[in-house]
Amino acid sequence: MATGTDLDRTDFAILRLLTKDAWLSNKQIAAAVGLAPSSCHERVKSLRARGVLLGAHAEVNLEAVGFALEAVLFVQLGKLEVGVVDDFVGSTATLPEVRHVFLVAGRSDLIVDVVVRDMQHLKAIISEHFNRHDVVLRVETSVVFDSRRQHVMPSP
Image 1 (cartoon, rainbow, N blue to C red):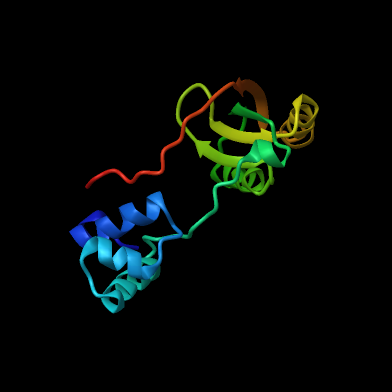
Image 2 (cartoon, rainbow, N blue to C red):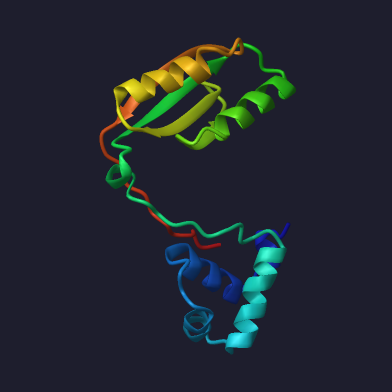
């Protein structure tokens, strides 16, 4: 995998453009960074091959498709053995309602961002996934009233 020192200014410019709009054509990216389209294509291909560009995803208005509630779950685990934690984090990340799972230091061991249809759906997720695992000691839930997200890559 590439590191920040393996990338030059042009690589970062390409990454910034794609972070803002993954639907840009190769021709548009090439024009914006001052490269020939063939050179730009090779750069993007190299960024993918080196594990810098991991994918492109569509941003969906979740409320428009029936997921009106977002919540953050603060999960405290009882067993902090590597295999047990990895298994639980892995199974949690595969739930379709889970947007992010963060393994963190502090009062909680995991912070989990979920989107659900309503409070009943949230209750079901917590009951059926989190409360059924012996490794989980406690789940504290915070409902998200509003959020802001930016799709910008920081400068090196």
